[in-house]
Image 1: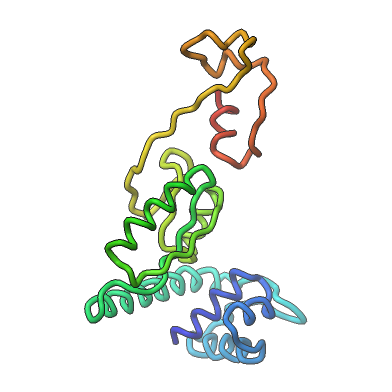
Image 2: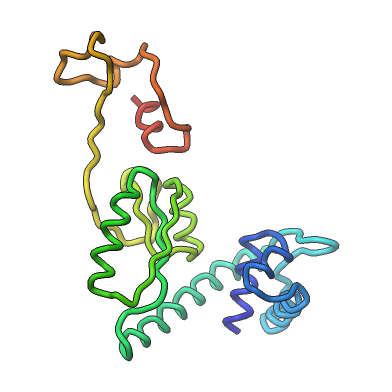
Length: 206
């Protein structure tokens, strides 16, 4: 049943049967057959479909949470069994906020020194995207802000604290000051990131 649950998760993620099949490396008829078998086993319809994907049924929404949990725990079980026999190996999927990409390389380097059989797959994402990827079991670990998105069931460990610096010209009114508040910069023209980024949110809040 695990392979059928993985098919179901892929369809829910991609919201398209063709893309879901491609992501799993199988044909679309095989995917459709697998979903139908899963529905028959559970005794409910999971997906609204006609000529195209029509979303999850209420039963499908409930089943998706269970499917993600079961597939995630099965993957963890396989990893622990492999560790017991051969030591830690496989792929570790990591998503990182852009400002912490240098930390990702540090973490990967130190981890690889202890576990050389582990391969890292690192991607740059926003804090909101990282939380969604964790919830969907699409990544194993993320480097993000602890005081931003609600973190739910994940375990956390602080890595470092960021300090913000003002870069200005020598002739600026702030050049000779040791400390500047966000309020001091209210009327200044600033080079900012987009509103979904944490650095921008801090400025907007202050």
